[in-house]
Image (cartoon, rainbow, N blue to C red; front, side, top):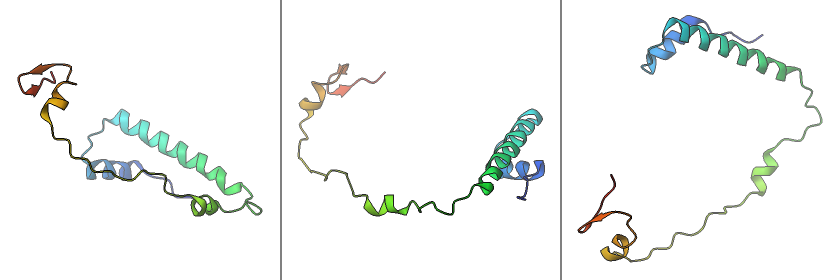
Length: 94
């Protein structure tokens, strides 16, 4: 049986991350955390005897990121001509 989280532990955790919880929020989070733990308990009963570990997915993966290409294009007019709204040499955001 796994350890259930108490309301006092939730208060301590909330205080450590500077959250201020109302009593109703605390009750709601406590109820939901107990529900999550209860649902995870079901996983203990699953027979994984003949299930292959999933590390093979990582071993076969490869880096699909593109190489960084450095280009020198510091032409102010190139950026300004694409601006939706502009005021002189500045892009107006709002």
